[in-house]
Image 1 (cartoon, rainbow, N blue to C red):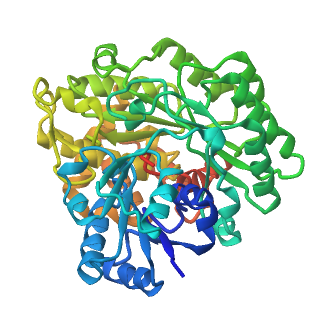
Image 2 (cartoon, helix red, strand yellow):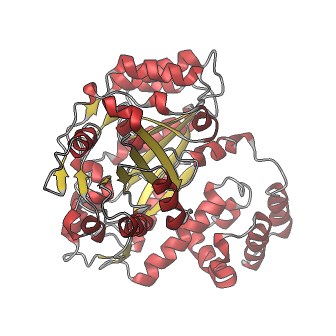
Image 3 (cartoon, rainbow, N blue to C red):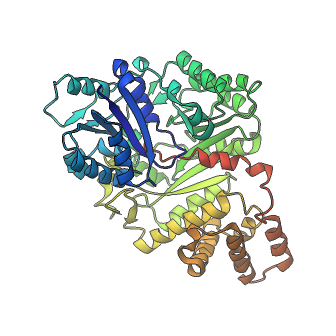
Length: 494
């Protein structure tokens, strides 16, 4: 019997591959002979190859993403060395652009560019029937999402119990932000609402309590987003411990949405709000449209009148932005009281239009995944290295919620950014790379040492703050959703 193996390397075991499940759901008559095998990037490609080949495949479909590109290349080398005759089909965002330039393309038999939900099945049928195409690279037509079979029944009970459950109500994005591959996904397409809500209902009945919506612009269409929120509000009577993650446009929050959001109880909603930059010149340069005044107003509303956990994103290293400009944006966002500021370093994703600025703005990127910016005309390499460490230290101390009492002491004077920048530099000088695996107790000791080294250090105040942030104490109710929130984080490029 012919067997189709669908496989990928997830960023971690807790992440279930949404793309593979869509492919499996739309295999039609081939589904009965298909097998989904998921791995993660911490497993050895040698062991992964052994597991795949032990399933005796007739065709292998492999999903390639920015987080697994290096490991996937090694895996493909092994598979083609052992079974050069075995048809190997690659797909995914990492392989959909600049395809011919990649070594992995030369090794593969076929590459599908774009959304392969339906095209993968058609290609498999041709191969299995002996009508193997001569061309290697195939550009998949954009599928009609209304014609797709939804994949939610393919989440197993084990997935529901132990893994992140991804769902989507729409695909694409109407905006043109040049750092993002979603800027290429036009038009925005909405999944038919009734079958989608029926699938959500089934997941709830099976025990799903955490949903991560992967829509890039969940609040773009208020009629659809309010219907989805109404669905979950009604479900709260039976399932009070829901946790929902949505990615929101920062400057669009009409009254219809506000009215629903304020009705959700604490710990049930997380919004990922992509501010990215407050600098209007930089935003215009990268084709990003955003009303900063409305974004600030919406964040104030969410922070003061709702119980939403706010995860806000900023990007460092955008063309034309210097450290002072980024710091001003960081301080502006910090002043709004969001729960987490995720400081991301700009990446040059394959196919993203941001590459057009390389020469004019001195953009130099890491040549291998994840293609992070190394230097720009306005931020040199040492500065961006310090920003990487800042992001790591901020995540450990501010975003973790474990230092709620000592963090204000670290940021007490002037610019929150530069106050923490000074601490981050001090911490690196003393702890070095150990902060990547430092215990909370040791980190707390370093914070105490730094605070006591400051001029006019108030010992009783410092001691009281450190005692309140003792790692042995339970997190405050304000930060209980954080552990759930972190489970729902994922690299954005599906």
